[in-house]
Length: 204
Image 1 (cartoon, rainbow, N blue to C red):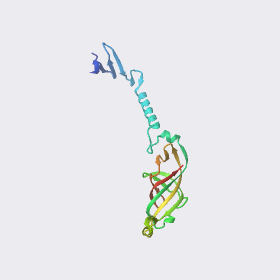
Image 2 (cartoon, rainbow, N blue to C red):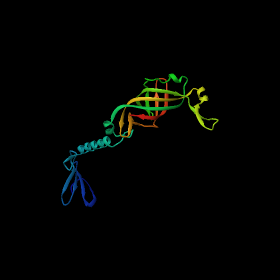
Image 3 (cartoon, one colour):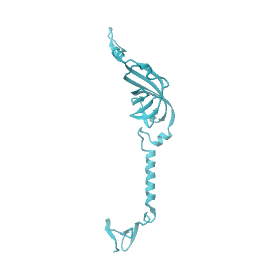
Image 4 (cartoon, rainbow, N blue to C red):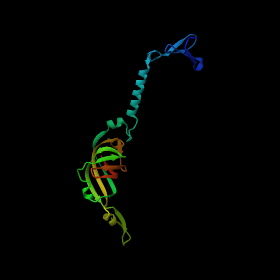
């Protein structure tokens, strides 16, 4: 047996480490180096080349198949259309002293989706509402009227129409990597306010 460290592999094969080269003993006196001093497998393929190829394969998988936080892959987002969109949000039960001057057409508040900033949007329309309550009438029907208690307590609802340039995919609207659909909770942040609501309509 040659000098150096030796050990058994399955099927009685023997590996020998001598002089910085790992060898595999195949049979009677036959040896094959599987990793030489230059870091090549079986004297042909560099270990560094194998590692580089593996990194490229994993990057391709991440690009084409793995979804972003919003659910679409990077390739899908890159091939999707950027276009102007509109969406409406409803903010309920905000206590504010001067509701009619809080949010104005043309303002550009910051949009936050799932507590993450997603850029600025533009206010296209604002409707300030007093929260309503159902009231029975004498004829047995039910009508909805503004709640006088909340009107005196400065509690208001806001229906806000917003515009932005966003990515449109087969799965809907994507803003800053997040899907924006009816029911998605969002925040609007301006110099004097932070208001939280949810999307009630999307148009693109």
